[in-house]
Length: 212
Image 1: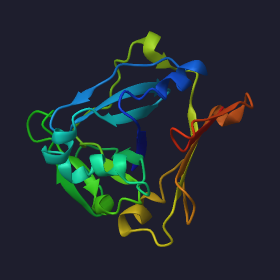
Image 2: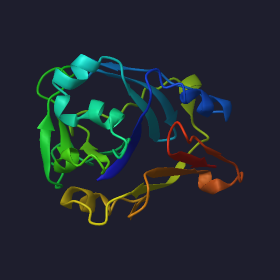
Image 3: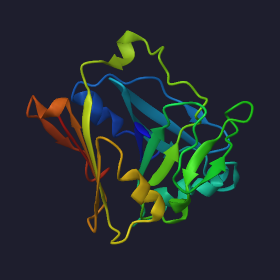
Image 4: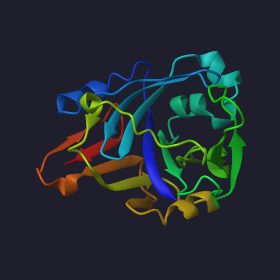
């Protein structure tokens, strides 16, 4: 599996995105997700996406096609992980090997589905998701929306569980991803190997730090 993007559940409107703009990132296009009750703000790095996800329709998030993702519950529960780790498989004929169930979102035509880790009920763990294998990776991002000089070099996720689920254990082998247990929720993104020596911390809005 290959790391595709990370999402972070934040407050409606994702005003925290402005703090990323302040450090020099250019904001990309946003999406809404019918049947899931969510919308996002996104930042396209070189080969990686930072997604700020928020609830924009409470009823749809609780009763729609995406209700089993429990995104609304994650947005409200104090101890829930606000993070999602999203991967791809290299070939469209492959199936991810971690324990999972299939989520067929309303916003995909045909039979494309996400593979969602069986740990989705364990709110203290990040959501673990594989993109539909047959969905091609976006390659048509306009240059003016692409932060091509920002390359992700390391992701560290702290998780307050002593014994990770079988799903999460499968994600431990991902290149560029480090999972650390028995620690309060925190996500650290290292970009460009910290060549500039700069950092920003998004707490208290989000337990997220960026180093570049």
